[in-house]
Each structure stands twice: as structure tokens, then as C-alpha cells.
Image 1 (tube, rainbow, N blue to C red):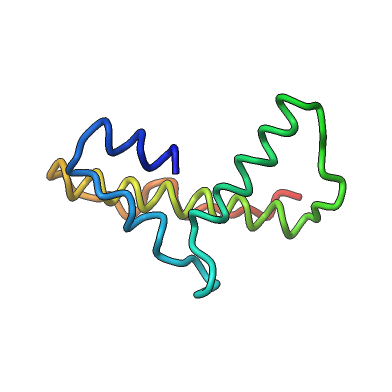
Image 2: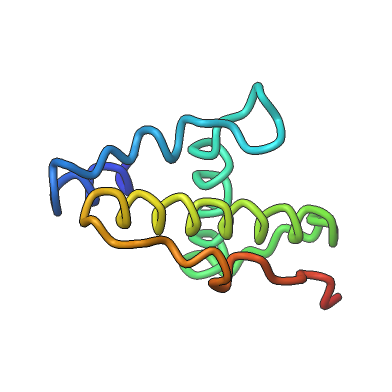
Length: 99
């Protein structure tokens, strides 16, 4: 929620609800819930020194894919809002098979 509010405070034309509320792969789960989980895990690492040892390689790959999906959606929203062309060959199509 805080992320959405921050972007809306920057520019009311940025309708970030579309970005977060549209599901990614799982139609029952919005990206908002996924990002909140990632942010909470990050906060536990940074502020509590806690690392969830139950995370699997697949979990981490999914987190990266979700973050990339949101980055792409933001890029497309900025292009539409500020009237510039989307470069389809940009960095959104990378191989995350680095484990």
C-alpha cells in the first residue's frame, strides 16, 4: 500500500492500482500481495537479521520474476503517462537461470 501511495503522491496520473492489482501467473493472487511478502522478507533481513531458511530456489526465482513484471508494468505506465515509446528490447526479457 505504501508503494502505491508514494507513486500517487508523485503524480496523480499514475494509476498504479492497475499495476499491482492485475495478477501475475496466479489469477487468485495480485502482485500487491507478492510484493508485500518480498518487502516483509527484506525488512526481516535488514532490521531483524532474520533469514527465512525455508525459501527455495524456486521461491527466489518467482520473486525475481514478479519484481521484473512490476518493473515492466511501471515502465509501460510511465511511457503511456508521459507519452514516450516503449522499447520492447529493453532489459525486461532476461534469463534468470543463474542459480
